[in-house]
Image 1 (cartoon, rainbow, N blue to C red):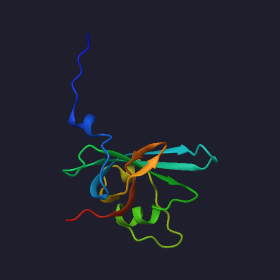
Image 2 (image 1 turned 30 degrees about the horizontal axis):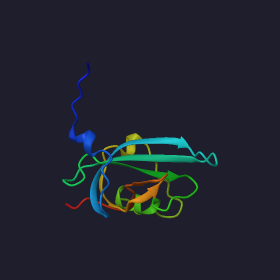
Image 3 (image 1 turned 90 degrees about the vertical axis):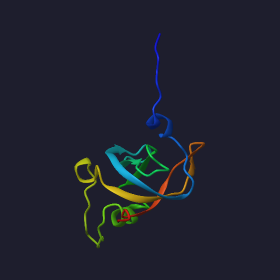
Length: 125
């Protein structure tokens, strides 16, 4: 017989949050080819670090061709002010452990409501 004990992390992982600002920490960065056109997707995985979103997980997809949240992410989560021609390296070494505030606007994806970060700002001091 197997006995399993659930943890707060397991129970909150997929919790659907209300639209609002929440604090997050980047936990992983992974490149994967797009399923549709062969371009590159960079997936940035985050975990909630605030009281109301602790352990909630969300991923942000940046496609090399176009991503509507790229500039807000660079400004808010990375703390940089991008200029034309600037390049930003999205790797585990550069991003893992960074903390930021992100606005969650849940959206329907593949028939299920999911958390979705649409705007970013530095953590309040």
